[in-house]
Length: 86
Picture 1: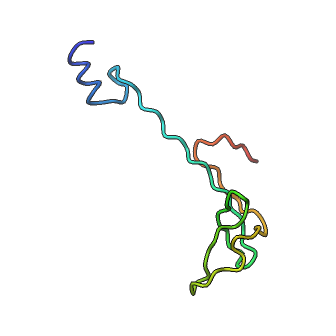
Picture 2 (picture 1 turned 90 degrees about the vertical axis):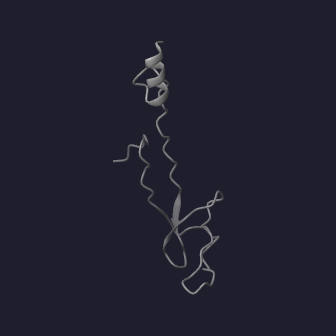
Picture 3 (picture 1 turned 45 degrees about the vertical axis):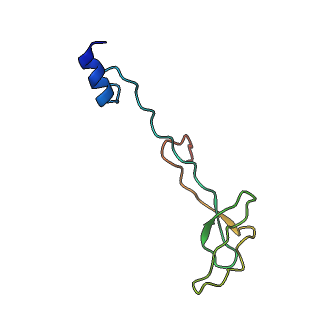
């Protein structure tokens, strides 16, 4: 590779001048969510499927945290996902 092309490949690493092409960003997996049984707001679920700990507005723990959700909350698919819901 001539020196000019090598210099361009190093300064502009998008693959235009023979350099390595950067990998596209990987989509982040969506976090499963569920509605709290006490306050009926959607929160993220733990790996055990329980509603994560959250507090009420005055700082007191919500009685519905760390319990099973009342219903699942819809999580929109992340960009680049192959989910095909109708």
